[in-house]
Image (cartoon, rainbow, N blue to C red; front, side, top):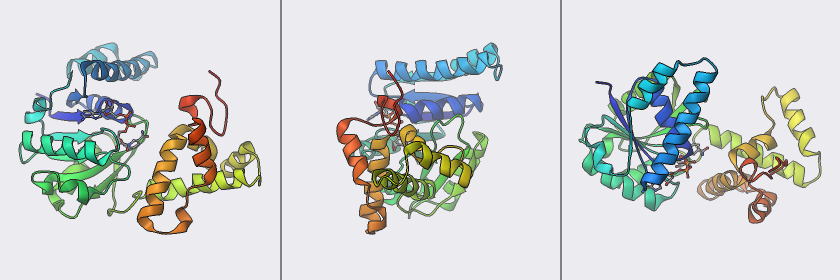
Length: 283
Ligand code: NAI
């Protein structure tokens, strides 16, 4: 029988992690707070696999096989026999803490428990985990089936064998792991979010148009996408939240969120997901 991975949270990241695990041959238990939300996660995952069939990346038979290895649900006790549990619930310390406490009591003490948090302290979350030496940050990127990187972030109690297991898991899921010391934003967000924030300052100051700022970075720095288009993709609210964490945790004004981001969030201009950010995306 295929090794079983439990994924908690069937939102954007959870369903992407579940899909990637299925494609890599694992069995997956995908949990959320209601059967309807879990079913929505499964529907999104299925749609993504179907696109893979249409584009000839996978066969219909292998898609059916993958869906046969997927068990959606709401009951955390389903995770008791999983060798790995990955948590991708809301980025809220209370929600994550309560999920992690319960899961770490249900799952065997050898079960690897990973959190996909973007900004919370792994060591602080670890205080809620029974046997915290098997708990580690495993940070995937959106969209998970496409993005090759996984940041692995040990907390102060994470054992070296847990770090090795997390690396092996990332490799088995077709990803490239990098191990990162615990710090706000880890590597990618610490570098990328200040870049997008600075681009927002340039735009706010009228230094150049959004198109010209993005063209400048695409052609002048060989970036595949400009920083403002990327901010729209990530979500202006998500970018603002990460800048606020960087600013408060690092205690350095170089991370001060651009006031324009706050204004955009207040207006509901959150980027692609609302149809309006630095660019307009139509209905
Ligand atoms: P989301 O809002 O799309 O999904 C979160 C899911 O968790 C929802 O379906 C929600 O119903 C579920 N949930 C909430 N409480 C729960 C509970 N107690 N038990 C089970 N399920 C519960 O959020 P998203 O974007 O998938 O983010 C999840 C995590 O991944 C967050 O920690 C976020 O910071 C992180 N992350 C997000 C990235 C992104 O680009 N969206 C990128 C990398 C990490």
